[in-house]
Length: 80
Image (cartoon, rainbow, N blue to C red; front, side, top):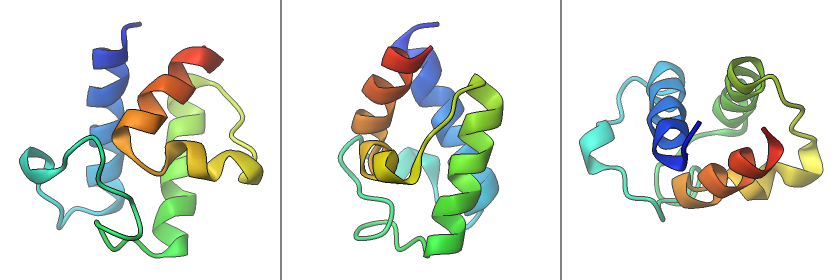
């Protein structure tokens, strides 16, 4: 799986968690909470969705590693 595939999957899961977001307007550097205004439950739901999709564990200490699309793509690619 390429980082582009991971990016597409991340955006799909993000939009499921926060359907009011427009994926065309999300940049790779947009922070989930600071820029996209997700609350902690939305972030947790995204973590669960990504964990299931990629069959990986994302410990709480690593949540900052998935806080942006760019960070998440690199983090997930290293885990799978």
